[in-house]
Length: 576
Image (cartoon, rainbow, N blue to C red; front, side, top):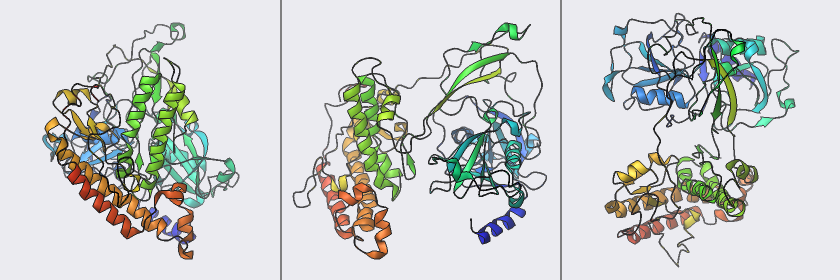
């Protein structure tokens, strides 16, 4: 960081007391089933030193927020607390840094659901995730280094929250770890010799680096290192992480530790937070939630954390492919992959969307693996496939065993099951042809296929009369579904989506890469172009590309005005 920039940052920090600054990419809300948050109370908007009660403001639309939507946002971003204020503004945090108020201070109805309360004038309605263990007694000794990682990418920092209460010139790892522990953050990172970052997750696009990249001496103790330029040394305190993060799959059983280790104790299965006896109490008015001391009975459970990003392009990450162990389930995983190609083009943003063709090629690699490796039950696996066909930006999930206090009564943790069967990636909408402009089935303009319209993959939605779906989102549950009679209209929508993607990716690629070839002032731009862009992808001038996209769109509307699928998708998961 340049000295003048650092000086300005220090000046700003001095006026912010103990605030943190978020520099991360917001993750999507949690769409999987999870334990409901428990209401913690009404809290003042500011603390005793005018610090914010909650740290992270969600970008979600405050006019559409409900309690359920806000807690899903915070669960998806791995925070302990969710707070709503001013009729629907959603915040998340690891701690609540303000005093508890009388419930009458939270009297604003939520705009999206006036039966719910969304804070008040200078007040937050706060909800707490019961799956976090108590943070009482957590010290800097609970943080363990996991190594040196890259930072400051185009997708947000590796560790999101800049801690300004620790001065740059006195920074040591211990001071940074203490700051993160005080605020309840499980991840801590030191960088540039004097910067401290805290967070709830690591950024999707960070990569491990060699230790020599994190060898800048700490400003407060030159016998220790505090990261490096564009590289951060990361520490993790597992005690501050949720036992059931978004995507958690409840284990089929829990293992009790030997009774002889805990004389006089009895062991029961884990109980979800469904009644007041087992729900956490409200957080304290300091930076730490209140705790109680008991003679805990001890259970263990296996925690499986799914990959946060299996394949990334620009601002987009795919929806994790389903696990598989034979040819049929592997084929369904490939189907799920190919159904997300247009979601990549739609969501990655330029220039990241140029890499979506690489994602499409990787989906084909998965299909090749299915054909070559899946011979019978147990003959193949997603793990083996990913080791041979490594996805771009892949960060595998983790499996760990956690020890925790057994609750006094057993409970069921069963969640409703949603049946999803990805259909083959062949759509009912037709790709138009033009001899003059050299496009047609299998060869659309710029290689950008018309989005797939085919059978609905969600059983309940299919049975409700929505037999078809337009696949333009990574999470198919967000895709538009519809009945058989609406196929022609939705094919028109698919034509428009193809047109937008053609303009935003192919035409922009031609403008960026093809038009500038040979110009010295753009040599560096072309040098950074993807290899496939240099070889063949962006072959037209910008104006020709725009014209091709438009003419193909016009032909597509004509080709699909009478598209029907009378003999397709007669029943769920068949009739493709």
